[in-house]
Length: 110
Image (cartoon, rainbow, N blue to C red; front, side):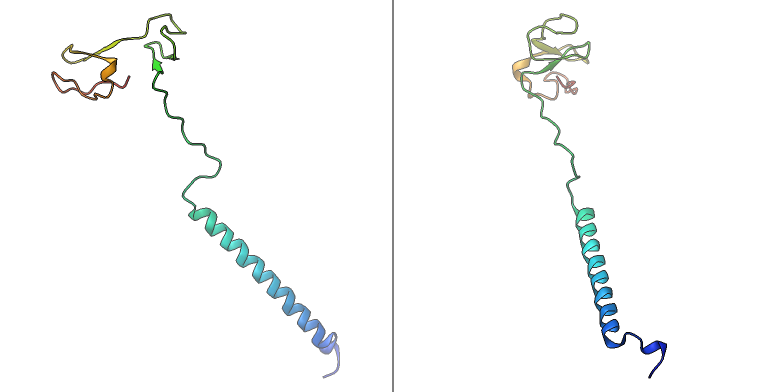
């Protein structure tokens, strides 16, 4: 087997096999990494939403406040909530209530 096909011989063939094996291993590692990234349930670089502070209230003007008076319009912090359906009032101390105690209508979140 002489001629151009035998040039390099067994050494060249082994180098080609080693190069091919390395390339296949790189593809397998990359595939595994991509699968792990895709199957991850937590989005990358996404912060958890902040929980609202118990002492924070939102004024009718839309400003979020932690003080007794609104920083946007100067109104005082509300001390009670009135049901839009029947007019029944509850104090903010009962802020865990989600429904009116008189008619059962849902309260707007405070």
